[in-house]
Length: 564
Ligand code: DON
Image (cartoon, rainbow, N blue to C red; front, side, top):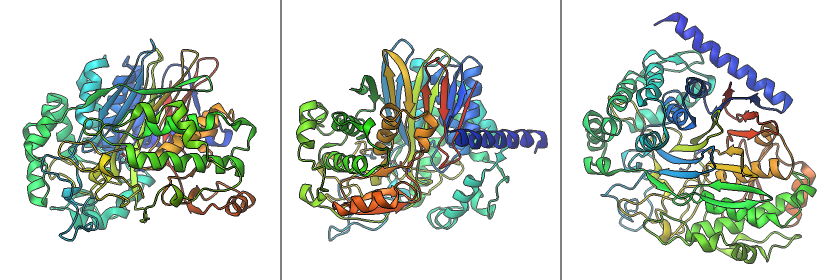
């Protein structure tokens, strides 16, 4: 292995981590003039920034970052998953791409239930049957064909090099692999090289030759390099070995879909966000409209009044999500009504400032524990002001934990995002019904909320996050932090988060989010509170008054902003 090359990559990772720590201390992110990429891995941000500097536009950089994350951040970056892109071009036109996974043709409503109609534990989460048909490669091809400027192979090649030559693994990367070793061993049909390597330590060289070869096929044949030919053969063989049902036809028929983004006005900002099959955009609009009539800027950012208000609005919005949201190609999602001002006002009119509503007064459900989960978001702005916001996922960390033999990528476990049985919560505690039941070829409902804000006709912010059900409320809070509380982008990203999702009926808070007095006040008026180490990993960009860009990577992860 070329030692100079590895040293160089180590330097990039270390220098990025240093700049991240400095940024946190000053509570201002990385400020640059000409372009910015914020993603979950320093090397992926570097790949994107290099593409921008080489004359690529924001869409080019997005494609390159998506592939780079598949190599550097396999816990969530992916070829075997899916996601959503929202963009705003410098001329103000907007668009949204849905490259969400689909249920295979052999899927059916009760596929995760036993003879007695009970859920078979873990079947929608782990192993070959948990995967939907992946959409990421089709998504990247579609983005590039419509908006790309540089040659396709220039966007894929950096990831091939990273996979083949390897790079020093970060502390987070090593920890993630080590924590999943047992599952990898149990759920795979062959010995994964990442398992036979043994315990991973920060700085170990992470090489993925099989993945490099898959990426080469994608570089040379675009969609046919993934949904056809050798990769499809390896994919279908893997399915057969492990009892999965994704077929050649499923792969061949997969297509990313252009959708009209949703938008709303919030205190003079135009918020542009994802349409169904994400629930994120509808819910974000309901949250923002629901809170707009209150004087949020006059409230303490983490005071009892504001937390109570957010929790009350959130529980009502998530109740709607469970009932009404699903894949619009299969179910008539009433988007117009749900995002209608009067409807939202009506939904919020029984909020009592002095008492928590019981979620059971709105609707009933059950609680299950959370398991480790991962998704990833990246935000990009180029020198012309084109902006791309992408959230992409395998669902849980390393998805179904199943790797396609000789193809080197993990398969998603997105089937768990369907309502596998009406009223029974999924891994995020989310419930659903008919709107989100499994049907062949249907896209499972998502919470991913890639979002862009403009002000006075100009780009203002690019934002998004992983976090399952907490995605929507994390994006919501980040917007409030900037728009209502005047925080810098980095401050808004760092600020502790809270979350309510109707069921389970409790406010979930980050450990340091609320002081004891605020917690007591909230409990006195009827709220239950649970704590979690961290909620979301927001990667965002704010356009400053002088036109420069403030990139903010979330310090909860190894997320890094790199601009120039
Ligand atoms: O699409 C969704 O809503 C989920 N599959 C996202 C999963 C996720 O964010 C997990 N990450 N922390």
